[in-house]
Image (tube, rainbow, N blue to C red; front, side, top):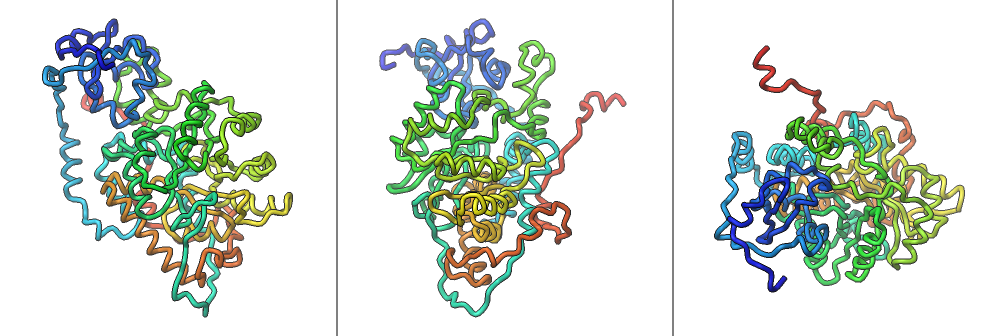
Length: 506
């Protein structure tokens, strides 16, 4: 495109209809007319910026190279003289003014004492759309709450009179060093929370010597996140498998060539779950007649999650593991295993491990927590194959619901190699940027040091199964003290509401 035409803003503005729709993104002009019916988020949002600069709307929810990957070269028309482009008038609503005011009154980072605090502040300073996407979960949101509550059914049996002058909680994950027995698990659309998106995680992970799992649906491009890594910094990749397998193969091969050390294949999302907070937010933002006119009701009433995930292959199956082994030498881990039978099958197929996870409670409501499934998997794989855990050759990971280092220590005691943490880091950078993630990791580091001493474990190898009592893990009605911080942050689901105009008539 070195000799591509340079357009004026007026020339672009002439193409502002459904019949001829051009948009500007990052100073480049694109003809998206033929793409309108295929846009996963519906055509209305594109038409809103027809003939205009759509960068501000585009950037938070798309990797920088997404548009060029999805449009043929002949639709990538050239550049625009930005000095001639009429600025899109941004009307700051009262709600946004109030949000910005709350943002300016955030407490100092020194006043943030735990991961719950980040969530509490993020809830108040994030936009409604962003909070709905990050916090939403499936159906009645039972599982997302159970993920956290399950840890309360595991109690410690501390050992005393052990020399814990020095404690070491470093470990190895898939053979790679980590200063903590956690990794930053994959979460999509980081720029909904902060302009730098997932780069906040990459930078903080480097500083603290922990591993970041790059999401397929990151707001930042894959290459951007890999390039931002420090020399020797380890990164994993979370993969949604595309219906077009050649696209997946190209991505996987590129990831391996880029130095990615582990491929975590998401297997719990053949269809996206109903995340009603997210869906309701999206629904209220669009006019019903537009939805009907464009015949996009399924895509456009399903929230941000559905809008970005229509490419995922529901036909992914066990037979595909042979194909994955043929295209990469990276360790293969299944992300989203929820019973011992599937963990056993993964082991028998020679995979490197599984993540016992229910997608953060965002897929099947009433799926069990990862920590509960962990107990089952460890017992059954010992019975069926004589395996002991943690196990270097077949590693078990858990994610979902973690808010304290004690949660992680419980999982380690029960056989996990490491634990993935997602939402808390999103909330940390949504409220405080990279410094927030840095602070969150330091909080966890301090909690690990204290709690390793208190249970009597100088190293992670000293964290044994007999240090915890998990006898109630499968009992879903157990009286335990209420976690007030967690429940104060939980935002109850809402019913459908009357329109404001209709209420005024009553």
